[in-house]
Length: 103
Image (cartoon, rainbow, N blue to C red; front, side):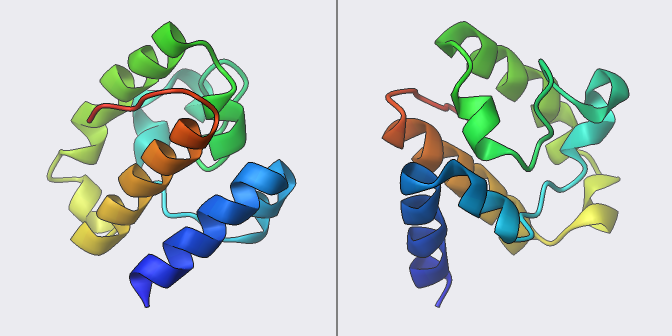
């Protein structure tokens, strides 16, 4: 079921970026590592916006949010499964836009 849902979300994100916002994407507290909770005007749940950044900005985003996503406090924000889902969705949406995400 998870793979099917992720595939649907990725497919929608690739064809209609606004469709991603129709789903509640777990961000697992990523905003806690970002000034004002956003990165270059992109909220952590706006995968299309994040992936539209240049590669160096995507790398910077991953570097900024990784400490929060791997912290003990994150466990209060989401489950391990939700964390995996967020990371996996970001990888796949960015890949569809010709970008790489390395966690």
